[in-house]
Length: 519
Image (cartoon, rainbow, N blue to C red; front, side, top):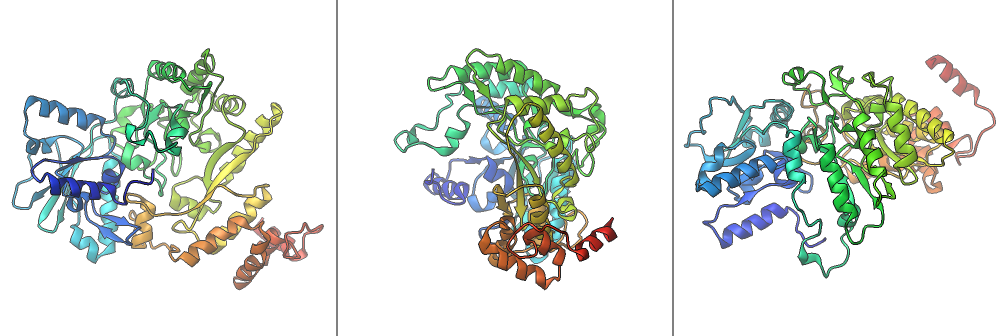
């Protein structure tokens, strides 16, 4: 690690094209996928055109490339010229405006605002994103085109979600499970060490969080491997020479979405919602956790497995019955109990992300009241089994829509729940997310409603500082900050009467009066 330049795809492709100008170059992967259309670049703080324009690549595969790559290789093997591969699904390419867009009677073509118009008008950039996200979440998407200088970007619609047989076919190949030999003499690779003994059970995520790119790259619909394919991989992992009996992860983008899909998929075919669980859980979504508990039990029974962990993030909200009422087989509690007692390494990490309902709505996350319910359930199971395994919540500061008072409330509420937060991060804009569009354009792409976002280094540092209310060096700063907005209640909740975080034996009368008024 550490040897790759920024904008690696652009850098390497331009080098290749300068050395071999007549050889076609195909690009893909997460960088190419998320930069396939006009996008905001946080490093340079500006809009950039499709990566095809900057890299001079000939063809781009977006998303998970199994299906388009198979078709590309099949056609090349037949002798089809590379220039004729532009009718394949899930590829993008640039062409001169004078050339007609390839005909396909099965595809409807939608035109986005040009790159130049996006540079002139942030609202047009935001409007583009809504179209892109809606199309990427459809069962059957449309083709998109966009003018870029004197060229036209063409983005063919994606393949449908992989079937069980198709995804098994990809995962069952005879991989070496080793880093590239180039790294053999350069020491351990931290990312490889983390995933060496992990097993990916599915792809996709239907959460649709505003700050996340998983659904933009892997899709909203879940593609799940068969039980046999997963257990066969367990056999392979446990046969590795340095395997010590511990599988680091049985998971996926969100660990507990395996095998989840629409009960009636004809309803899904008509849906273009970016999330199946926001603002409420879709009544058509099958959220049974039974397939996961069955696989976990079979992995536990493997003679070479001492313990298998669920290291991927768990969507806690899917396990809260007040939020997720699709619990027909009453398996939610069984799943959670099994995970807590068998599959976590001392603590469970979940991601409520914030406590402010206003901020959470922008994030497309559930109300924090559901995290309270989850914690009650988690604590009860831990007590039942006499386990001392902390619950570790993840939070984000500086997210679009989050203001100073929201962060102070987050600090106070989590303090009152007994947390001293450590697993926190500052929002970083990445291409192809709602939150990034709001950050750059100042408006939500679906409603064009304006939202405030902190951007300067000082503002972002200030929001992040609230997480660490328990550090003495922050007390004076917090007290001064909250006095500016005249919020004595928050000051008291965070720091107490002394301003030094000492416990008060009696709640002040003014605070009792405020609480009574709210009730």
